Image (cartoon, rainbow, N blue to C red; front, side):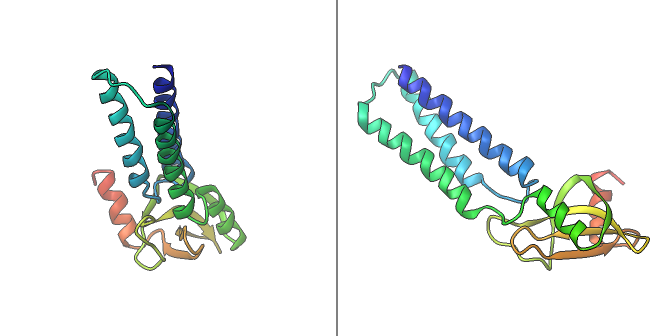
Length: 166
């Protein structure tokens, strides 16, 4: 029973860590629902077996635990973005933008920057250059920038207005 609880705690801990990576380190641009689904399914099976008081076959269950956890972690590191949210701020600064700041919404869909099945959005910042204010999107796959005038009527302003109930 101690081994089963240990497996559950490790699995839940890894799930929380993966969720933290997706929501904080990668600001929601990274879709890791497949890895989370595998972990949740595994945890569910473990809990059902505990409730039904099924016994575990020693080494076989150890191998399954290791495989499930390794696959979840490996999946994340093979499909993760090439740049984190904080690294993208440094990239913007290196392109001569000043006063770079975050919004409450840290990522938004980009129609021109490269994306794939797991990375659908781009990092969103507000920055200034030559005394003008811009929305700056950073592509997490190829590190490219897409810039929109802050005061123009663009889809980012409309999206943010919608979120704010305007």
